[in-house]
Structure formats: C-alpha cells, structure tokens
Length: 354
Ligand code: FAD
Image (cartoon, rainbow, N blue to C red; front, top):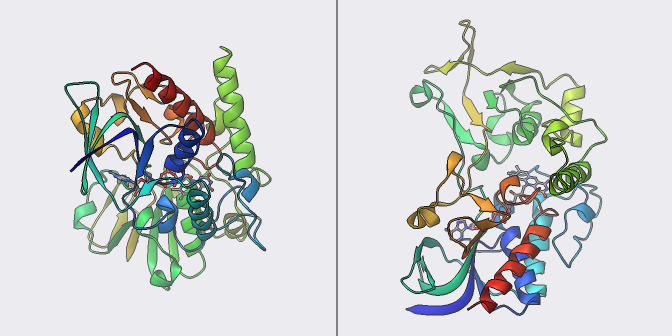
C-alpha cells in the first residue's frame, strides 16, 4: 500500500518530536515513523544510573519546559522518557510505531519514496532524525575476536550488578566511559583505559555551560569570527556527582589504551597485561543512516554533506540531531530546537515552491 504525505520524519526520538512540533505550528502535513514500540527514543535503553548532565530546565524541547524531577537536580533517563511521552501526546504528534524505514529512494517525479516494514510513503521531503544509538562503534583492536570474556558496548550496559567481583576493563575517556567506570568502581576490579589522560570539566560546569559554549561558537562562526573550539575546548567529561565522587575517592585512575587483547585480557605495548572477565567498549557511535544509502549521498567520514540540516546533493532531504555537523549541540535535548525550527521553515518554503 502506498500513502501520500508532504513530509516524512524518520525517527520519533527527541529530534523527530522537535521537528514535529515546528511542522505542526507551520501547518505542514507530516507523519513521524519510529521503529520503537514505545515513545522515548534512545532514552528507553539507557543504563540504570544514567542521569542528564543538565538540570531539567536546560533539557527542554521547544514549547514545553521539562518539569523538574522530585529530589533530583539532574533527571534520570526514565524522567526523560516520561517527558517525551507526554510531549508527543500534548502536541498530538502523528507518530506511527513500530515502523522501521528500510530505504529512501528518488522517484522519477518530484517525490521521494520511503519504504518501511509496513508499507510505502510518497513524500515531498524527508527529515532523517534517527540518532546514533543504533550504530555503536567498536574500534578495530587486534585480538578482539579471540578474547574469551564478555564484550559489551555502552548500549548493552545496564548496571554493576552483572559484574560484582569481576575484572572489568572499561574503554573510553568520554562521558559514557567515565560514568560507566564510576558505576563499576566500587564492586569490581576496574581498569579504565583512555586514549589520553581524562579531561574532566571543572566541577561547576554542567550541560548549561556546554550549551552556552556551543551557542557562543555558533554566533562566532556566523559572524565570521575565529572558532572558539566550542564544547571540546572545555574538556571531555562532565563531572556529574557519581563521577566526581568516584574520582575524589581515588577510584577513577586511567591507564593508556592497550595495544591488543589476548584470550584472557588486555595487553599494553610494553607487555604489561590485565586479565579481564569483561571489556566494555564506551567508544562512541556513528549516525544511523543506512536507510539513506539508496540516495548515494555519503561523504567524508560517513557523513552526508549538509548546509545547516539540508543535504547538499538532495534538497528534499534534511538531517536532524546527529551532532554539530547538523547544528551546534543538535544532539542534545535543548540544542535540537533551533535546527528543528530552521528545518521546518525551510521545508514549508520548499512546499510552497511546488
Ligand atoms: P534517538 O533518541 O536515538 O531517536 C531516534 C529514533 O529513531 C529512535 O526511536 C529509533 O528507534 C528511530 N529509528 C532509527 N532508525 C530508524 C529507522 N530506520 N526507521 C524508523 N525509525 C528509526 N543529551 C542531553 O541533552 N543531555 C544529556 O545529559 C545527555 N546525555 C547523554 C548520555 C549518553 C550516554 C548518550 C549516548 C547521549 C546523551 N545525550 C544527552 C545526547 C542525546 O540527547 C541523545 O543521544 C538523544 O537520544 C538523541 O536523540 P535523537 O532523537 O537524535 O535520537
């Protein structure tokens, strides 16, 4: 069955919802197709102890401030899921789920064809807002396939109970690595391997300052001033309370990255080794763009070249929420609002051109 709609938004996480909010305000005819069974995008799959690195007021989508969570300065992931669920109901966003988009094709006329596991849509524009959680990245470290212990990525981690008393290696010096290392620091024999010495942000810096830094960088670039370096210039790790506590207790000592794995653990270049029951790869993500492969737009580093959120070589396609290349801080709750608004406006103009 083929249905028609002016705009298809692929993905019903925070980015897809923010796009929906602005499309609705502009009176655009659209649907949101989301592969999950229930609302909340990636937040539904976060580990048990994950908390936002910003207070609720700094984690809001357009139109509706996130309410504070009782007793928590930094809300947990379940609170975010509740907020996103309420958000899509409040604005009556037309989310269809579970619907997985397998491919987007060009039609011979002005339309794009969106193929899903429950039918096909013909549409004038597509917003891809599929996030990164669904494409975990694992580095090609020699010996990985021969290691006999357990290997997980950030996306598989739930909590420390599975690892009590075990020898665990956590790989990665970003926020996920630091938070998961802090989570495991008390009940496991922990090795935390980072490419360079961990760079903690000052204790009084949280997501608010990161957002301000990203905004200042955008302004500077817009005005042709020098690149301030934005968020990256401040450090890598937000010292959220559990990270700070583990660090201050001397439990978060990092080692350099090891050279390879053997059957029973990890081995550094100088021959030093550490046995491991489990290795947890907190080594990041890549944008989930497989559904766009038929359009043939892939550019350097697996990214599709864009101006703002609009694909350079396919002006009916917009990419929202994947990181700074699709809008400064666009992969955060508070940061996705502005690129979502600009995207909706651009699409409204595109639709009037027909
Ligand atoms: P997602 O939440 O991943 O939503 C994308 C949706 O698209 C999903 O529902 C998915 O199932 C669906 N989808 C994917 N492919 C398809 C397809 N082919 N067809 C149909 N549907 C599809 N941000 C903050 O603001 N504050 C924080 O404190 C914070 N902490 C973070 C901590 C961690 C560990 C991580 C990983 C991220 C954190 N972020 C934080 C960043 C960001 O807010 C999240 O990554 C957020 O989930 C991104 O939202 P999204 O809508 O872009 O993607």
